[in-house]
Length: 165
Image 1 (spheres, rainbow, N blue to C red):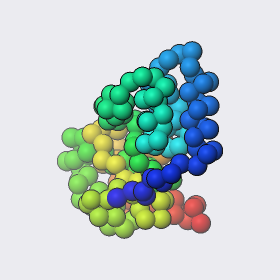
Image 2: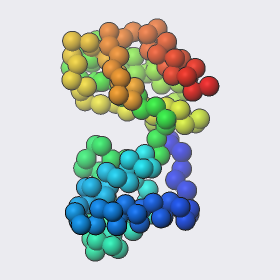
Image 3: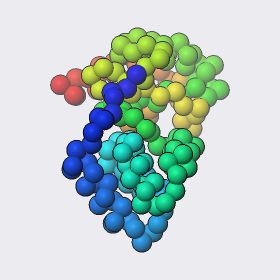
Image 4: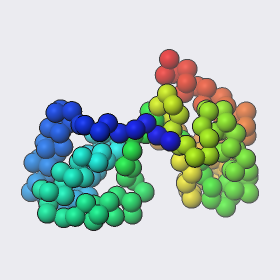
């Protein structure tokens, strides 16, 4: 369970979305709008979907369809650090399932949650990180860690926790 999205966006948040829309209006590209909104907020807030629907004269369901089709987009806030656990064949054989369970236990999230209560970590299972030679592997933000075991994962996570303090 991730942090809930605010039900009433601030005036500043609305102004940010308006600015993005008008700065990229000449391109008339839903993808560009969504990418820019996600870059700014870390996800695509619901109010921005409603705004784009009205401005672009497309249905909200169409916009949700685009967002849910592309794995790069998120519809809810995420943690400061995105932890992607590879479950490709090489990582799976190397124990990715057990390592993922250990990771979740260490950071304190259950199977139905993906973000820690303090907002420091969001965990995502991914099909492949493209680094089979390092299996089992995970990525934290843009950095890949490989040849993992339970102790290495704990040390990596603790390093990010210490950096946040």
